[in-house]
Amino acid sequence: MMRQTGLLVRALLLMALILTTSSMSQGGVIIAPARLEAVVGPDGNTPGLRLLNTGSEAVTVSLSLADGGHDLDGAPLFDESAAGRERWANRVFLERTEVFLGPQESVPVKIRALPEAGRGLYPVIMAEIRSVGSSVVGVETVARVAVPVLLTRLPAKHAVSAFGLTVMQETAGGPLLIEGILRNEGDVHVRTGARIAIEGPGIEDEVLLNPVTVLPGLARRVRGQWRPDSLPPGDYVAHMVPTRSHPDFHDPDDAVSVSFGVLKPYELALAKPCFEQFDVRRSIESALAVEALIGNRGNVTEQAGLEINVIDQTGDVIGHRYWELSGVNPGTARAVGGDIPLNGSPPGEYLVKASLWHNGHEVAEEIRSVHFDPSQVVADG
Image (cartoon, rainbow, N blue to C red; front, side):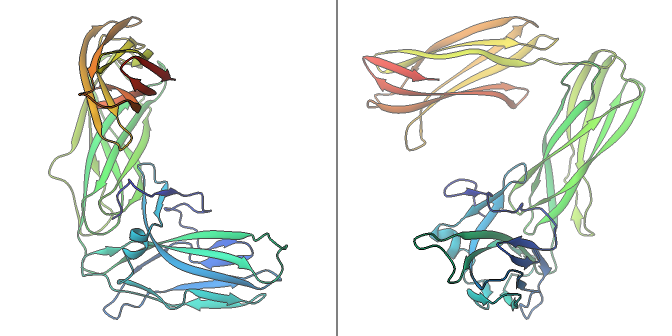
């Protein structure tokens, strides 16, 4: 599956990767289904697509394959680079790549696929729609539609792991906000949610997080709220287990768990580290000097970590520092800073990324661009 780096184009293409609408319409052309999902037999045949021109003018539709994926929130990612187009070239075959549609004309497009047994194919069919013979001279309107494809061949094994469980609360008395991440460890896509089991003083409860579709090798964030009838002070623990969504679904060996405390009734005990200030102020010989003011907007004493990375124009980290902060009381802030050696790096443009970590999660981020020069540093906030 496509990595989430490189030439990825976010879906400003009239669709959402996980939508289940039956058709997609643009420029008077309807493409159905809007998402092609099927189990492919040994002959490689799929349901294919149907294109319908509902307008009064003729159009041409150009079809091509690209690589696809999604981010943690399900937003689609497309790779239309040469490598992305070639990824599926020998395994997914379009009957035609150019289709002429007269007014009110409907045309089927057959699609053959050759997935390996127990594995899936996940290209995206890109459709470019152009009017024929009616555009203003020098102006051409092109509509683009992306049709995600999810093709599998039985038998298929499903495996999902859970991690990154957090329990938060925006305001005292409000609901507890639960968030976790589900990663697809299998070779085919899976639709899965999560069950959150919560234990505390005299309390045993559970919350079901709505299922999402996850492609192989990728992950999705799932969220939910817990509004218990009572929430007395004390220590609690929450466990997250992916929910079964297929007869062959295999639960991970262990659930992911997180402990949390309740300070007062309906008030979660939270440390909320944050950046009150972050600056890149000057250079000393071959180093950058950074200063940060880390505050605690929570209601309990916090422990946090401040990580600084200096990144060059190729994306390599050329400078790094890490500070542990402990005993930062609620409503207070602590100053931290120092020099970051750049190991003789030449003058040029660099990014300074500051990450604030708490309980293994990045909770805040600040980025500054700097022009590094042994005699002067200018920071752009």
